[in-house]
Image 1 (cartoon, rainbow, N blue to C red):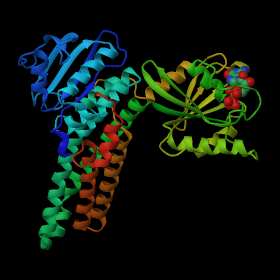
Image 2 (image 1 turned 60 degrees about the horizontal axis):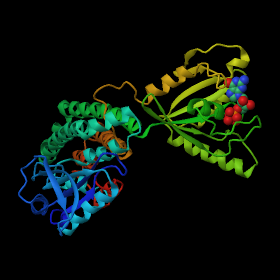
Image 3 (image 1 turned 90 degrees about the vertical axis):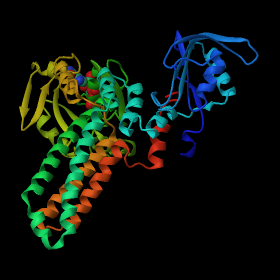
Image 4 (image 1 turned 45 degrees about the vertical axis):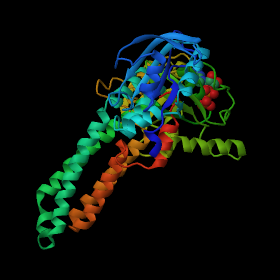
Length: 448
Ligand code: GDP
């Protein structure tokens, strides 16, 4: 970390092959000197200079804009130089070489954003949102990532963190006065504070789970006995013929995946092998993978038909708690039925035909809702590690509540709160290891 301010880094910061403008970005202490050399005089801060950028020998490389953002009011918090030239890979490479000749070195992936984080310009969740914004595959995902980049998620985490710290102080004060500890901990204000905190956390966890779906897409596992029409459904939703549809039972031997965007919402569909007992080695492996898929899914869609529905319901027993369930009665064209929805014991049943497409709009609408469509202005993106951290916080708070209710052991409750604070702090990076930072920034693209 010692080198993080000493060196000046440079990279091409525009999409490869982008027509029009190409950008070389430079950050670090040498920027003012490099800018002065390239422009022939000191640049005006945050002013677009039209400049002829030349080789050391005087040959023209390109004409374009030169902008200097002096530290600390820049993306990285350091001196930043942006050179906007023609979007030619060859010219951009020459510009980059010229800048490196003047003392910069090539930036590693994510290094600009990492410096922004190290210099306190962004917290970790915001920095991750920069990468998520670039990688977004749907409009809703991009909008949500932008919200996180703006700090919407981080501010909510910060509010919780402050409440958690206040409660910790309260409980630790009680421990410091052991003769009064019991009275202190029996104070209903402490229980109230803890309950309020748990309610806030539950709300934030729900929002983060939705943010994860917006970011990663909704993972839909399609399950059902062989020949129920799972592959046909996947094809109908995906609009191509990737899954093989044949009338012989047991053809879907592996997990087939399809990503699709429904009106700007990302869906990850997995068609699992027909779940059934089998002696066939290959098919057994497929069944094993199908079970794995069910552990990871957000939604399980049971595909069946009017004839087999009651017997097939047993297949839902394999679906983990917390995974949304949906029953799709397929092949209504054969049974001369019409599409309709019905709620049975809290599970939505839909009637449809993968063959004719009847009833599939209702399925699409439902999946879009689950994926977070229409979640409104404030919806923010989140990553799996954020959701896991919030789940850890939840577990620690639950333990703390149990301890206070049953034993009034202040030390134990304080310990749980300390762990909770640590887990919460990992989201925004108040606590972070070099390994975590390496993993996060290493997955960025160069130039960001
Ligand atoms: P899977 O084994 O569950 O993946 O089932 P498939 O998608 O391979 O379909 C099995 C058979 O059912 C094929 O012959 C399909 O053409 C047929 N099928 C699938 N969906 C429908 C439907 O909605 N109506 C009718 N009539 N046949 C269907």
